[in-house]
Image 1 (cartoon, one colour):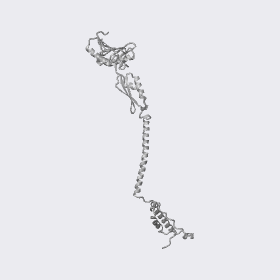
Image 2 (tube, rainbow, N blue to C red; image 1 turned 90 degrees about the vertical axis):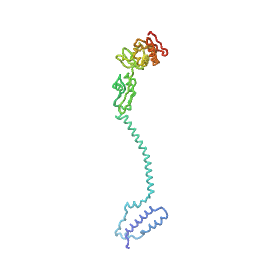
Image 3 (tube, rainbow, N blue to C red; image 1 turned 45 degrees about the vertical axis):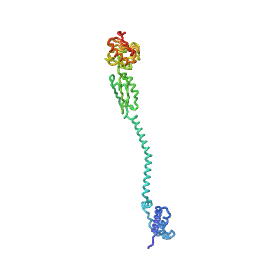
Image 4 (cartoon, rainbow, N blue to C red; image 1 turned 30 degrees about the vertical axis):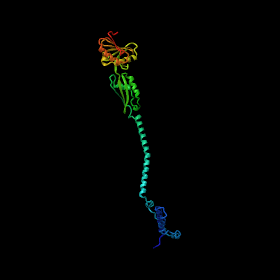
Length: 330
C-alpha cells in the first residue's frame, strides 16, 4: 500500500472525530456503552502529532488538498437525535394544551372587546347618528273637535333632535295646554324617527252659558269648547252670579249621571251652590236634586217616581231614601 499524503491523514482524522461526536450524542448514558464507543473511536489510527510533517521540512513543497467539510444538511440530520412515537405524541398533546390555554385567555379579551365595540356603536347610533333623529310627528285618536294637524302643531317636536332624548313630557304638556278639548295625551317614540301622540278628547255632558257663550262641559266640570247652538241631547246648565268651579263640577257630575232617556227630558240644570242643584224638565216639572252625592241612586229613584206618579209637578230626591213629591213646583 502506498504512503498516504498529509492531506488524506487530516481528512481521516476529522471524519473519525465527527463519528465519535455523533455516537456520544445518540448512545445512552450508561457505562455498558462506553467500551463500544472507545473501540469505535480507536478503530482507526490517530495521527501522531509528533510525527514529521514533510511540509515543515520542505517549505517549497506544495500544500495538500484543503479539508473537506460535510454539507450543512448532512451535519444537521446527523446531529438530530431520533424521536420515538411516544415522545412525539406527548409533544403534540403538550402543544394542544398550550394552545387551549392561550385561547381561553384570549377568548375573554376578544369577547370583551366586541361587547365594548357594540356598546360604543349603539351609543353613537342612538345619540349622534342621523339614523335615529326625529323626522316627524304623527297624531292618532278619535278626534271630532280637533284634528291631527293641530295636534302636531301644538306638540312642537323639534326636527333633527335625537329621538332617544326627546322630552315626551314637554310634548304632552304643550298639547294639553294648547288644546282644551283634549282630556288625555300619551306621547311615545316610534322608532326609528317618529314621535307618536295619542289623544283622547273630552266628552261633553252638558252645555253651560258663561258670559253669553255656550260652552261644553265635561264630567269633571271643565269648560272646553264653544257652541254656536246648543246640541240636542245635552242638558243646559244655568248658573247664577258667583257660581264657582266647584259648583260647575257638581252640576257636571249630576248631568253625567242622568240616563240618556232622562237627559233628553231635561231642559236645563239650575246651579246655585254645590248643595243646591235642581233639574227643570221640558214639561215644566221640577226636580230637587241637592248635591251630586249618590247621583246614580237619585236618577233611578226619579225614573221610578215619574212612572208611579206622572201627574205631580215636583220631585224631591235630595234624600233618595225618602223621596218627596208635590203637585206644586214651589
